[in-house]
Length: 101
Image (cartoon, rainbow, N blue to C red; front, side, top):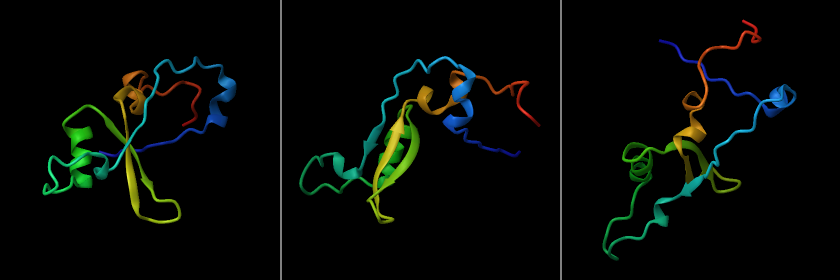
């Protein structure tokens, strides 16, 4: 099986008179430190546990990592609701006839 992901810039669709997206999309930006520990002696949450809490134990989708500006140090993980991250939930996989092969 092969998969290909494409990203379409706004400039490519601006003149198509498409209807506005109708779902309010809330971004959730979290870091392990954003969750209080149950006691001062508790082990802090890890990045993997944070990801699991949103993407495996709930229905959120991972959108992107956020890094400390100017570094490669992870600052937050960004999540959103499925309808804001998965176009197939509110659209279709069928390629429009105006797309070139």
